[in-house]
Length: 374
Image (tube, rainbow, N blue to C red; front, side, top):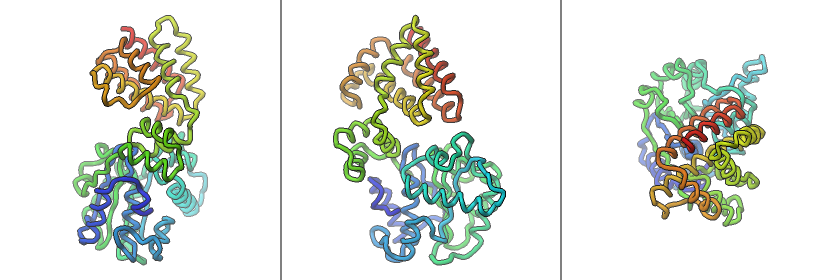
């Protein structure tokens, strides 16, 4: 990947390019961003730029090094990433080769995706992904050799927050004192879950979410989306390009109507059967739609809070959604919104860990009903 393929992030790109041109490259860098931030694509583009033999304001994209980097097969770029326990091949080396092939295909086909998309791509969505304790030994082994072709040897660790404690502790020494021209690039969406000893050994690179204009422009110019639809998707994505691309490909998901019907059922104490029916309906959704309706619900709670606070000028909803929010405000207050948001956030956590969707949504609905109607 090249920097030019990544929308926005102009200042961050310049910071990275300048560090290479000025020969001020930190030996270990931590690319930190919220869920949906493009820190992995940025790390990939940075690796391409480091190896490029004809550097300018971006990697040339045509030299032998770039040709390999753009296919993620450069021999001096190594990857470590979370993996579920899905091993079905007794041949260890063949299994590693197959997973690496899947990883490269994932980066080529879904460069702006997240951990859920990665685990789905290789069939590990029903199991917890992690970076095993054996990986620390593999990291040390891979970096003990001199670079093959490039002046640099790079180790990209994606989602280091999923490292087994033994693996995390196992890389501390080499992370602090790597061999000459050896560089670590750690890419995380949850820096607060990392060991303080890892954070202290890295230079932090903050990667912000994209603004609406950047996402909308990308959808229209790169994905040929209709401007009106791109604008609608951008509002729902809230800076998350991965989510925007998902929403763009799932136009039939009517989250607004599902949410309105759900909240009306929660508001009516006498309609318990409706809550059961909604839980069964949500249970029938695939995991992606379940996640989307939950995130949509949390976004609508924020919009309700804005309406309660009189901050109408910064609403991100319009039409029927705005009309519902204005009505919903009549039965909500700040405390109810705060509690409802927390309930949805907790439920989303359990969904991500493969709890029963029917039980999660039914329990959530009952608690929301009690919150709305104390």
